[in-house]
Image (cartoon, rainbow, N blue to C red; front, side, top):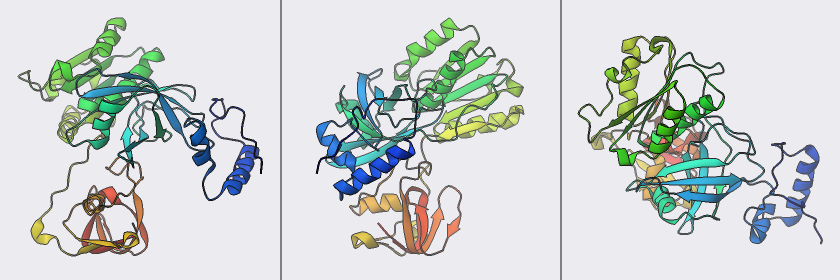
Length: 373
């Protein structure tokens, strides 16, 4: 059977979603090539030639610090662009296993024709981040998702914008700052960033250039291993123009988030605090109160419940369920709980219904649980 494919399936167009005719043709082609999707055949010719899958080609690799890698990625035509502050799911294969992690673009908001700039900080126990830092090369093709997330700029420009970030939490708020500057925002814009040392700031030069080029941009850098007052205090927000009516955006470790939230309330800032954590604090486990067994029914595997989220326990049992952000945002790790009771480690909410969908990364077993993975 002869099947005619699109002349240039990687060409990007203004239309983000294929039309009805394209969807119909795609369905016919996929049915003809069953049991494998069309993209499984196209990738044998060119990994960037896709019918449905969103992928990206790495077109530039930089190492701004010893612990980071900056990737410029050119996505396929399925990319719809991103709002400043959103995140994407990046999918890579490490040692034959596909892994998914969430990263926030650092470039200003862009439409479907824009590239994606991701800066990844490698952590000691970070399998994917370490792999990208050490092995990412120009020409590599990675899997992507379209941008998601509610941590975005308000519909109306703020009277005063304050961005507070720590470590790799810099990327979403830098995207916001760059977006405001790109649209000629005229209000005061204050960028407060925390890092261990100056050499740990992945965007040190870019931030300095931004402040030098725009009189309304003020940069306040703090170094936790060198400055006597390196960790956040409310005093670090002193003298910010229009602070009491400012929109404050914070992203970083839990301790920074909590401290900024307390200062926000203490100062009495009228606008709500905008925040997003890039790590999920591990729930405390009391070994004396943990009992029961987790059954992973689809894999015919079971393990003694140790109180951690089900995703962690599944991986400890040798399973590799699909996952992404690992903190309850992306919904990549949703699975069916056949029976038993779970606790949401973020909210404390208890779910004791059978045959319900749960997020593995934030659901901890309460007693024995049967999960369909």
